[in-house]
Amino acid sequence: MSSHTKGHARHDTALIHGLSGSEVQTLSETCIEAKGRAYCPYSNFRVGCSLLLTNGTIVQGANVENAAYPVGTCAERVTIGTAVVQGARKGDIRAIAVATDISPPASPCGMCRQFIREFCELNMPVFMYDKEGKSTIMTLEQLLPMSFGPEKLLSTDEIANGGRDDLARSTSELGNA
Ligand code: THU
Image (cartoon, rainbow, N blue to C red; front, top):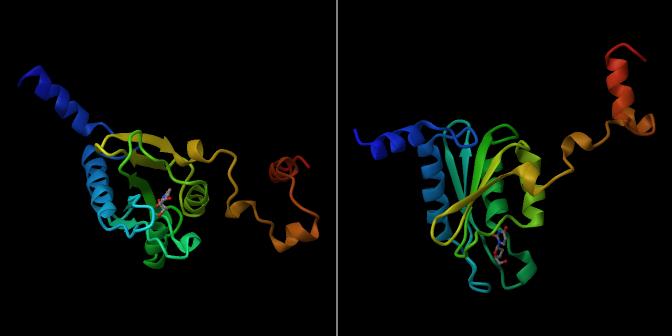
């Protein structure tokens, strides 16, 4: 076996943010394919998206524009919305991939970052593919630091108590209050 082949074999078994080489390959192929389904007659900016779910399923989507421009929806929200109505919830999405026709690759817009935050772990990888199919990878937390999510909302008890103090709560949970 040549050293080149050995190197390739080693690469194939390495995990990229917990994903195998073939899972990453599937994500790249499916988000690039989804880009071809974009409905974007106004911007001509195609965005394809795919999700890898924990059950191995791939969910695809693309941006869907509208003559009333602000009504159009980004590929990421179309795709996550599709997965959610199919039953996916937080913890079910292992990775998200987005493909556009620009280099360096586009990253999800601010609204999509927040939409993703509702359903994905902060350490979930976001694969961003450029027009050549080359990728940049960042975690959701890198794209959306200090983010707001459902666990930040107050329970009725916390509202009655005037809010939440995480330090006081963790101290009392330890029995030191
Ligand atoms: N777009 C996405 O689908 N995802 C993003 O994160 C950025 C922008 C779409 C929206 C619109 O259809 C087109 O790209 C140009 O903004």
